[in-house]
Amino acid sequence: MNVTYALIQYVEDPIRKEGRNIGIIAQGFNYLCLRMLGVKPPDIDVTLFEALSPKSRECGWVYLEWIDWFQDLVNDKGMTLDKILAIGRTLEGGNLVIKDGGMIEASDKGILDDAADYLFKRLVSQPKRRITGRFADRIDDILKTAKIYYQGDFEKDISIEFLPVEKASITVTLPIVLMQKPRTVFKVINPRGSVDSLLRQVNDAVYTFDTLVSNGFVDKDHCIAITDKAPAPKAQHINRLADYANIVLLSDLDVVSKVTRVVEKGKIHHH
Picture 1 (cartoon, rainbow, N blue to C red):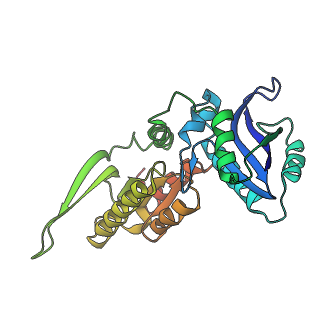
Picture 2: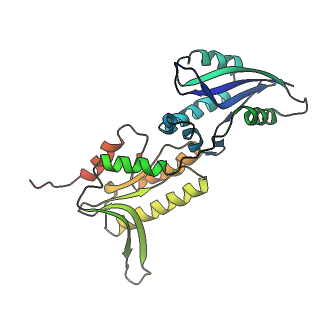
Picture 3: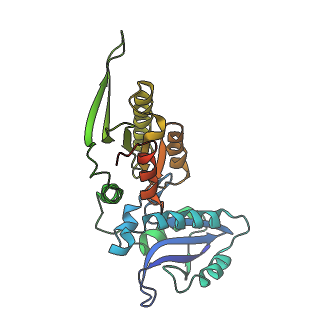
């Protein structure tokens, strides 16, 4: 079987035109197969893309959109590699490039998935450096900009215990609380990592918000779930939080004003 393929490249500086391979699209027997850096369905590890360069560190959310876009292209029934290369020509001058890679011979008994895996291993090198703490850094930046850390009633990493009548006590933990009434409480949900890890975080947040609201500690309008954009399988878990809290995405352009609006809601300012 002849397998033709295209290279997907990230170009840091469009003037220098130096591209880093971040993925491949292979075509054989009229089928298309996509492989991209950090993607192992259903999980996506954006930190591998962010580790490519200082500029890519700020563009993890853009990379997620590229992945979605390429998946849509490859899943389109009438799509061919030639059509994708034609679309690629319209992207010239930007940070994303699609290049004709050529052709390889694969065994007739081989399946396209194997050929795609082979090409991906040969052509896309995994960055050595992994960025950790980036998610936490961004939350810090946003909470500083929204002046949360500088409020007199700001408290960090606290446990709150409730003693319901004739029931076992319930303790919940919160990374960030503004204690002045109407109180505001925050939970952080990091969507990177496995679906299991995300599920645990979402379940914990749901339980925490539900407990705090039902015990009168805070009202739902003042619960904030800080998280980030996630691909479809994970997004559905994150969306469950909408019934319990205001969901704030780090990649939202108005993220600071969103946080500020929730905190300020119903506050009486004495002059």
